[in-house]
Amino acid sequence: MGWCAIIQEDPIAYREYLSKTTTRGSTQIDGDKNAFLESREAKLGIIPNRLLLESRLLFDGGYYKRASQLLLDSQQLFETNAALKLEYNYRLGRIFHQLNDFSKALFHYQQTILEGMDLPEYFACNAALQMGIIYESLADQRKAVKYYNLCLEIHPDDYRSSLHMKAEAGLNRVK
Image (cartoon, rainbow, N blue to C red):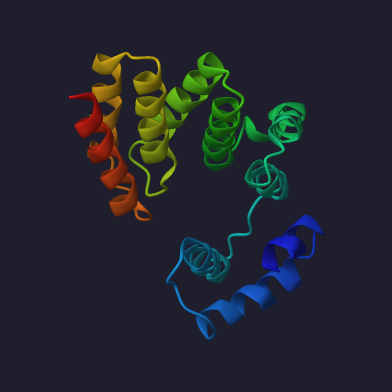
């Protein structure tokens, strides 16, 4: 509900909905964990970028071309803000990956790693994992191993164990 408020450009309602995540529900599944993480951001005064959130929701719904067009049409809005640019590149990497445009996906994942490797966000860690997955699908074991190992070297604040377990499983498949 908080995300709907962001899409509708209502930050007051967003904060109101997210304040409820600390007193209601649990963090047993990823959706609940996302809500909890968002409430932590709301407490810090961080409101998600509407365009990035909208592209994420379009992506989650399988509307990859609409999500890519939304981001590509607004590229200039993300150039001057490093945090937004990090997520922008990550989201484009995910979208192009799903569209099987691996060269563009790899480019945006690489940008995400370069910009976010030492940051607490999970974007660089998952970008490395996804690069490993792409290279594994292309039967390039050497590069797959390289990026699965890189994933294991990155320590985000969130989703670390899940991402690292997936990288370890990838390593077991390609070795």
